[in-house]
Length: 154
Ligand code: 4NP
Image 1 (spheres, protein in one colour):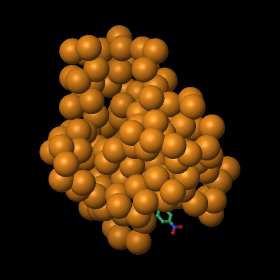
Image 2 (spheres, helix red, strand yellow; image 1 turned 45 degrees about the vertical axis):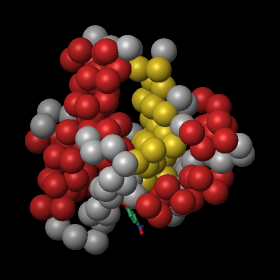
Image 3 (cartoon, helix red, strand yellow; image 1 turned 30 degrees about the vertical axis):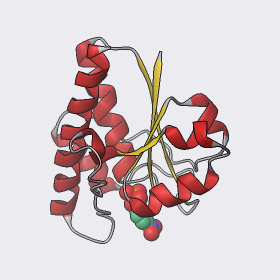
């Protein structure tokens, strides 16, 4: 079974939204995937997603309210085939944790699923308003569609 890990800073906004969206799409397609999300930082470990992220996902019929934030660790490189990061800061942190070239090759930007090699950031919505969460949802929705399409072709 293919396994995918989404990574952002806090694991309370962007990556749990990505986890919920991909899980929803995989279920709809009958595609068996192992999906999880983590943060590079520990500030929010043990917390459920930000209420604004939960509310945004809920508008699209996706329940992320019970996800619990955790911090990335080196074992994640063994557990997951693909490690998808939200932005350049997260990318650098994850690459820094990688033990070897095999680990590094698993890491890519989420939005490179839509425009390969652009390294476009999913912007951090934490300090903004609800519109930022909606924008993030739409970006992640596109990326997850592209990922499902790619996985179905294999
Ligand atoms: P996330 O958003 O990385 O998308 O979960 C953030 C959540 C919390 C903080 C920063 C970004 N923070 O600084 O506490």
